[in-house]
Amino acid sequence: MDKDQMQKLVEAILQEIAQENLKKLTEQNDVALSTNLSNAPIEISELVPDFKQPKESHVSSGSFSSLTIDLPDPTTDEMRKKPGVDHPLDSEGLPALISTTSARIGGGRAGTRLRTRSLLLFQSDLAVTQDTLYRDVDLKILAQFNLFSVQTQITEGKEQYLLRPDLGRRLNEEACKTIQAKCVKSPNIQICIGDGLSAYAIEVNLPKIFPVLEAGCKTAGLTLGTPFFIQYCRVGVMNDIGDLIQPDVLILLIGERPGLGRAESMSAYMAFRPSSGQTDADREVICNIFDGGGTNPLEAGAYAIQMAKKMIKNQASGVKSKLIE
Ligand code: B12
Image: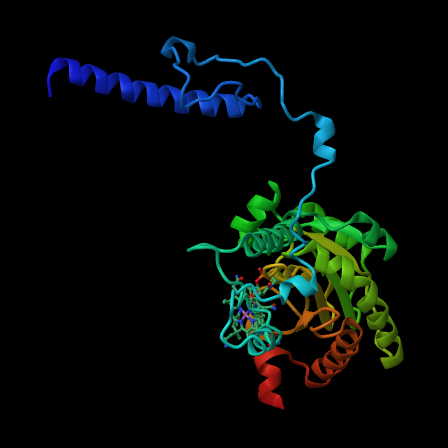
C-alpha cells in the first residue's frame, strides 16, 4: 500500500468514527439528525467533547401522549399462558403443557433471543421481587395492629441487611430497653412480626392471620404477650426476644425470600422457650403462607395455635419435639 492509499484509508476510518460519534452525541442530546449521515461530509473538529445540538426535537412532548404501545400487557394471566412458539407441532398440547406449570416454557424465540413479551415479563417479575425486598413495611399496617417497632443491629439500611444476616439476628440496645419496658413477661404465646425479605408478604397476610392467632389463643386459654414489629429482621433474632420476654412459645411472622414475581409469601417460625444458643433445629416453620396457591393465612393461623399447644404439651420444639412424638 502506497502513501496515498494509506492516507485515504486513514481518512475513511476517521470519517466513519466521526459519523458514529456524531450519531451517539446526537442521540444523547435528544435531537434528530437533519442531514443524511451516510452522505454528509463531517469535519472532525466539529466533534468536540462539549458538543451541543440545539434542544429541538422532532418529537414534541405532545406527540408522546399520542404514542400507542402495541404490545399487550405480558403480566396478565392470559398472556403468561399464551404460547409464543410459531407453528408448534402439537398446537393443542402446548397450551395444555404451559397451563400445568408456572415455569417459563413455550415462550418461543425471535432468532436466537427471547421474544420481547418474554423479556418484558421477566423484567416486570424481577421488579416485583426487588420492590418487595428493598421496600419498608407500610407503617399503616403497624398502626392498625398497635405494633410498636424496634430494630436489629443493622444501622445502614437494606444493603447492609442483605450482606450481614448476623446483625439481623441481634436486637440493638434501644430495642432491648423498649421491649423490657413495654412487653408483658412470660406469656404463653408471644407474637412478633419481622419484615424479613418481603414487606409485601407482611402487608397482605398480617391482617388475615393476626385476628386468627388472637382468637385462637383466647379459645385455647393461652395468654398472649405484647406484639411488636422488628425492622431488618432475621429468624435468629428469636433467641434475643426469648431471653428478654421468656414466652412459652414465640411465633415470628416474617417475609420469606421472594421468588421471581412472587412477593406475597410469609412464614411463621416458632420455638418453645427460645433462648441464646438455640438453632433452627429447635424451631419449626409454617411456610408459604399466602392466599391463592399457598397455605391460606387463616388456616395457617389456626395451625400455628395447634402447633403451639403441642409444643407446650411436649415442652419442646423442632427436632426434640419430633423425637418425643
Ligand atoms: C433460604 C432457605 C434455606 C437456606 C437458609 C440459609 C440462609 N441463611 O438463608 C438453606 C439452604 C441453608 C436452607 C436449609 C434448609 N431448609 Co430451607 N429454605 C429456605 C427458603 C428458600 C427461604 C427461607 C426464608 O426466606 N427465610 C426468611 C428469612 C428472613 O430468614 P433468615 O433469617 O434469612 O434465614 C433463616 C431461615 O431461612 C431458616 N431456615 C431455612 N430453612 C429452614 C427450615 C426449617 C425447618 C427451619 C426451622 C428454619 C429454616 O434458616 C435461616 C438461618 O436461620 C425456604 C422457602 C420458603 N418458602 O420459605 C426454605 C424452607 C424454609 N427450607 C426448608 C427445609 C426443609 C430446609 C432444610 C431442613 C432442608 C434439609 N433437609 O436440609 C434445611 C434446614 C436448615 C436449617 N437452617 O436448619 C423448607 C421447610 C419446610 C417445613 N415446613 O418444614 C422450606 C419451606 C423449603 C421447602 N418448601 O421445602 N433453607
